[in-house]
Amino acid sequence: MRKTFDCYRTSMPRTRVAGYHLGCLNSSMFVDFNRSENDQISLIRISFDGLGCCNIEGEPIPLDATDSQSFISEIEQEKLNEDAMSKLILKAININKEFIWDEALERYDLI
Image 1 (cartoon, one colour):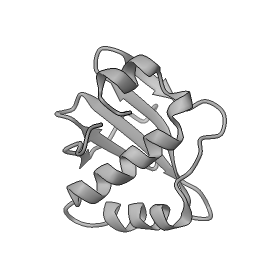
Image 2: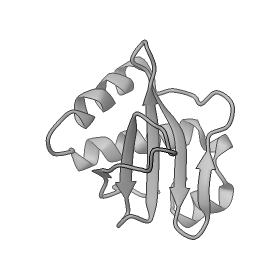
Image 3: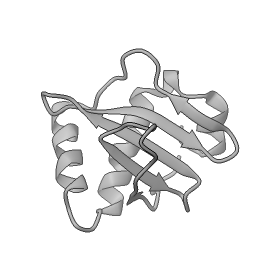
Image 4: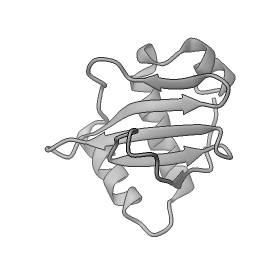
């Protein structure tokens, strides 16, 4: 399983609505998150170079309260802590893996 993602904050077109956009793996993977009113962080979309954009259909499973708070704290830092953010991204992917294409999970070494 992949250990780090070399992630960075980015922006997306107005049509790709999300609270947070992160680019990863030399811009070959992008992950989008939303923050709920009760400060829970949910993965809502992940796109993969060569495979397309995978929306998390239905109700995405949010990070737990501790991990959500860690995500919020990290994303608000001037410089992202690569290890911390990578662990949080992996957790979000793993708890929602049933909604993500198997081919992408395997090709990008996410499981």
